[in-house]
Length: 312
Image 1: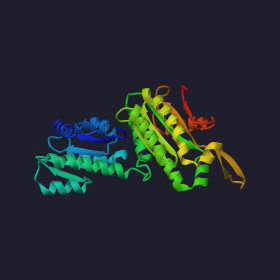
Image 2: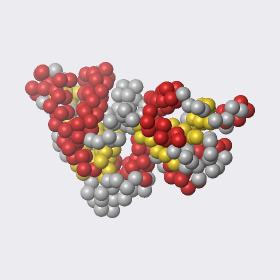
Image 3: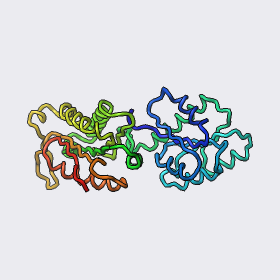
């Protein structure tokens, strides 16, 4: 499953996490993180940058309001929806929680179906709202940055691939933006298919915008994913050209100087870096190295896969 939804369960017992895991045992695409309410553990739990936070207000070591305030002070989670589960019947308590930027208060005993659909629907809504691309339905820059932060804080080897098209602007100029949009959707499908085929659960595909995409995957599978993307793209991109242009191998488009210039059939560039060769501390570092290796890859003619193996 690509692009998991992350849900943080804050509970000083295992009551709510046990119930949640039971309810979602057959549901793919969710990652549930459990932590207690003490500050160090809660801070660690928030590093997962959840899409939704569920707090069990019963038997907390720390005051539930203090827990929620701590969450809101965390810049990555200051607008993340919070659900409170509680045994109290005190309406003033519930209103007070809502005043303090808690989105939902659910009374116990929990109706399991109601609890399940609340988590599923809210996390789905948040995931959809964070997608900047109506064209591909893929997560945008906020989600990409969050995924990079998750990987940085993990101990696993990961690879980040920056993917874009060569000669896409020329294609758009000749065939029009509607056909260009079809190429973007096709590219998105190819990348997702590659990750589904050779990746593992939790791999990530994001759409920066235009013809720029990012994947974050396990390092050991990255090269297979890249090779599949290039092979499938090169094989099928010709469907978006006329037979005449395919036979010539190029199109003619006016350049900025108003002169006709030849542009080859579109190819795809996959530039990869990983924490195998360098330990990254921030997404900004990854972005800078990604831009550098992609610039180098773009100088190579044809569809290209280039891995940054520099030890820095």
